[in-house]
Every structure is written in C-alpha cells, then in structure tokens.
Image (tube, rainbow, N blue to C red; front, side, top):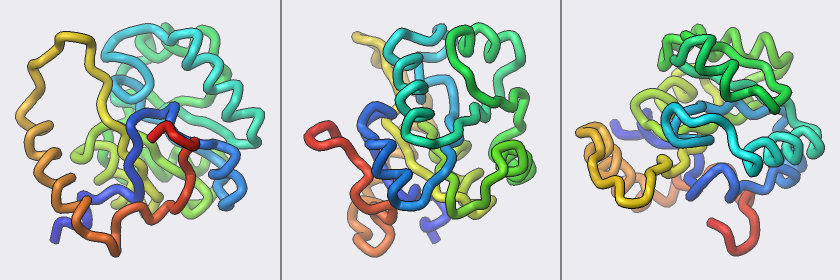
Amino acid sequence: MLKKYYPWGYARSVFSLDYRKLYAKGFRAVIFDLDNTLVHHGDPSTPEVDALFREIHAAGLKTLLLTNNDEERVQMFIKNIDTLYICDADKPSPECYEKALAMLGTDRRETLCVGDQIFIDVIGANRAGIPSLLVHYIQLPGETKIGKKRYIEKLILSFYRRDSRLRNRLGDVYRKGVN
C-alpha cells in the first residue's frame, strides 16, 4: 500500500550523488525539482549548484527542471545554468513527466527524477514509471517550522527504511562518505 510513496533511493542532498555512477548504470538524464531540492525556496542558484550542473553535463547526463513555479522564477534560477525546463508543470500529474521525457529524448528507465517531496515529486515520478530519488529538503539554519505534509513524509520514510526489498533500488550511486 505504501509502495506508491516510496522513492527508489534517498540522499541527503543533490551533492550526495555520484553522477558518473548514474551514467555507468545506464541513466542518461536527470529531472530535478527546483525549490528545496536544489536551493532553498525562492533563492537564486549558487556557484555550487552552477558547478554541479556543469559536472552533471560533463558526466554525459542531460538535465531538465520540472517545477510548479512560474517562468519568472525559473529564469532567475537558470541565469548561469544551461538546462531544459518545464514550469507551471502541474506535478504530480504524469503528463508533465511524459513531456519531460519527450524533451530529453530519453525513456523512463534511463531517466532519474530527483525531488524533495514525496507527495509531489516521488508520487509523480512513480505514476509515470520513472525511477525517483528523494533528497532531504533544504532548510535554513534555525528554520524550525515545517508543513504538516513533512511530518507525514517522515512517517512514510520510517516504513520505507524498514522495507529492504524496496529501499535503495538504485544501488551504489552515491559519493563516498557523503550520504
């Protein structure tokens, strides 16, 4: 019953992944959520995120931002990043994931979806048949208020961590000593 909420993998952040390992495992593209996945909600990109996208592209992977944000927000973020994007995506609708696959020119099994929300990013990717990776959402230092959905996500993740059959279906795709 909870399987539809389970990601294929979990990482502390987008910086925990070894994108060369993803490529070696047959992945050819990464679909990223934007807010609280790559940067804190509403923030512009950082030099570290800009460098991460260059690293991902150098590994041979294509990228696409799939976000429910508007065009203005996306344009502010990608100022120094060369990536495809879909804004006002209506996630978790499977149609936006299908559109992303068409834009990337990849199929489901060679594309990874990375996001911070189970009820948006993971469910959407799972409905579309795309492997998903959940990252811990970005919080500012001292930020203690989280939404009700985050508490439910924590409960789901506790069950996910106990289910060895469905936990970490991506295998070793992490940087050494980072996750």
